[in-house]
Image 1 (tube, rainbow, N blue to C red):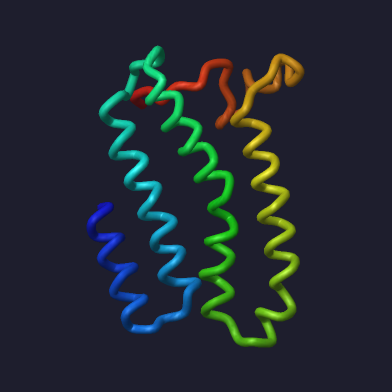
Image 2 (image 1 turned 90 degrees about the horizontal axis):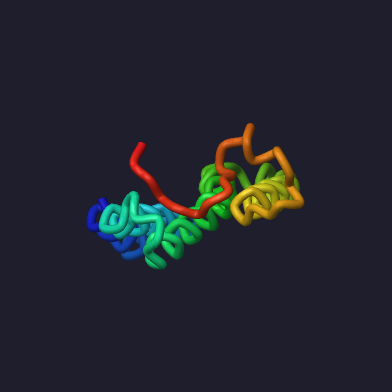
Amino acid sequence: MTTVGLSGALWAKKQKLPAGIWVSLLWFTGMEFIQAMTYRVINQCGDPLNTTLTYFGYMHIALQGYFVQWVGLTFSTAEIRRKWFWPAMISSTVTALWYTAMAFYTPIMGTLCKHVWFCAEQTCSIHG
């Protein structure tokens, strides 16, 4: 999937498609690459590479709202882009901050992590 995504992004750039399309393709291709690398250390919670890739995955998910909004606005009229750019960026920022807080668990959050996905007491990519 990484090769297909990278090829598609490069093709879109060569075709001079809007940056929102090919940059977003690169972003989601990056996630495929992170996932492919994570399979090498899946369920190996003591491995620092597993922890690092898990954090990369968390941050990738936390920031993906910007790219989804960018693609959506790319296919909109100029008037809609002007009207919705800032609301889209603000909502993406709020979402990114929330997911970042969830990814970096602290005891201050108490029992919250026991009931919310994307939040764990241990940073580790596991099967399933």
